Length: 569
Image (cartoon, rainbow, N blue to C red; front, top):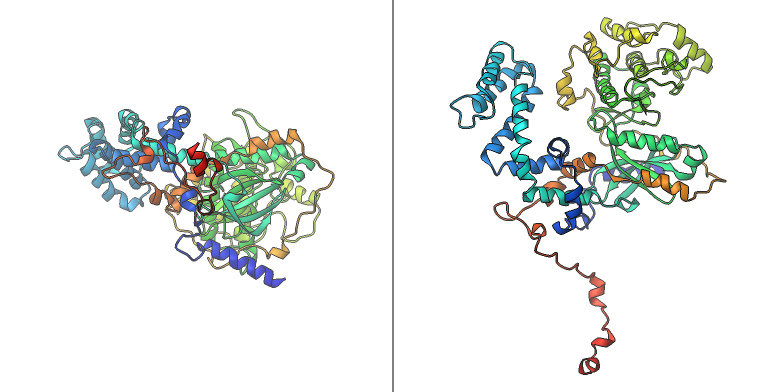
């Protein structure tokens, strides 16, 4: 039995490391799996693609890279793009580095005698930037200039890009992105845990070697529990959110027995495990502060999409390979229309806010109560209203949530006490939270004074703890309880309609990120000499016929009509 776990972990760790070969976990046929179609096959995409500058040139990683490649062929366009990149670097720089970087940008792009002077920026804007750099170089110094340059790129440069070979290459990538996804797209590895409707296992994309977590939702179990709306809701919410602090949905597909969500794999385990199983319970305050800041950013991104999460607890906060955390499991999340509120007693006992326990109406307030509970537990080593493994009735825990004040030990600094008390206010109107479309009230607390949120959101802050790359932060495969067989449930054509809504294949931004991060984009995205069209990009040059398979060429039988007698007739 122990041997089975060792083998499962060994195979899984080898896959995480790239398989040990030069292909980095890719299939032998990876180039065939990702072969560009001839441009003539992309005509429908050309007609239907959303030609939105923000989406193509800024949000989509491959679109952004191809637009920058196009701009590199024109001196003015290239200068504009380089300016925007320099401003982005300036805005996420450390405060002490900003004066030097700001002066470099000014001298290169705004100084009158510079050969790269941006003609789109007015003298008034130049003067304003110069004065701001001399007085107090805040990160907003170049905001107006950036707006002007972006508007310039959205005009003639973007129009020309859409008539270029770079846009045609984007169409080829989009064609690959639109191809069907099946179980054969992936290799499957060990079970990592359990979800509400099935197992969660590790998987690897054959074409790229990228590792993911595959959350399986068994079809019969969904139907038996009437969980169709919940399953589809989670899928739709995950598909809309693109945040480094929330697990991303990369693929959605179906098998004969299950619906599958392919998500960001978080190899570092969950916060509950790290709080309670590695040494004395709880963390040092600096470590708790880092995780709390990233969770706050994740909640803010969800709330800006009008999604309330409703299941904040340590086991739903996962660590990645580098030690950053993400919010996971959006099964209880729901979208709240503008100006409305909802009611629903959902969540986990001990972490549900008073308004949830009392079944009152709410918007996003329960999530900040949950954040307070997590900060408290990270520092104290136990939840505020229920000790770990304490045998107590649900009604008593709910009473404590409604009526009792939490207790603070010497582990808490004064700033930590203050933020916990503000997040754990019983009355919603007195609680820190989401206001004016941001969580700035939470970020402004003295507890977070040492956190540069701009750099944090850009992924520029190093985590205080990095998981062991040789460790598997999951239960032994034999300790993960297996689901029982669902009996008495039959699937029919009405179920197929629901599955078709779920089975949507690749999700654009995560898929394109995968192509870039695994260097597939770099290896495949080649053009002809001097940036000319390759044969697959020439419209009036038809694609070559597909090669016959090796065995077919060897064992090809002669058709009777091609015999010598037939020729003579």
